[in-house]
Structure formats: C-alpha cells, structure tokens
Image (cartoon, rainbow, N blue to C red; front, side):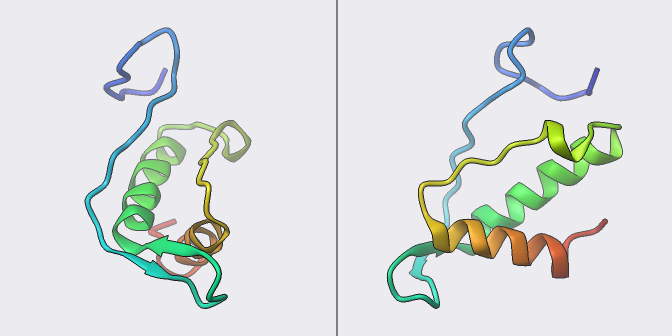
Length: 80
C-alpha cells in the first residue's frame, strides 16, 4: 500500500481543503485556484512515485476551469 495518512485506512479517498485565491478562468465562465492545483500535483506525484497507476488516481472538481488548469499544471509544472 501507499504510505499516506488516509482518514479511513480501508477507504482510500479524502477531501482536501485548500486555502487559496479563486480566480476567473481564461474561458471567463469558470473558476480556478492555483494553490489547489499545486497541492493536487504534489499529492498525485507522491502516489505515482509510490507505484500507484495513473488510472487509479481520480481528482474531482466542479469547475471546468480548474480541471483544465490542473491538467496544464501537471503537464508543464509537475515534477514527473
């Protein structure tokens, strides 16, 4: 297993609250939070380095602007 402080060890999922500034995405119709995206990248990278397969990782956001920013951030600023 992955060495991670899961809130409920037999249910490997959690909600992560991030303090950061929301801003309007480039589409003008959605939102993004750069701090949250950086935290997602750090956690996802930790899982990947621990041997978790990409298809086993899911990130849920209600905002299309945030989804697009996370994808871009991980491709261009991620450590993997």
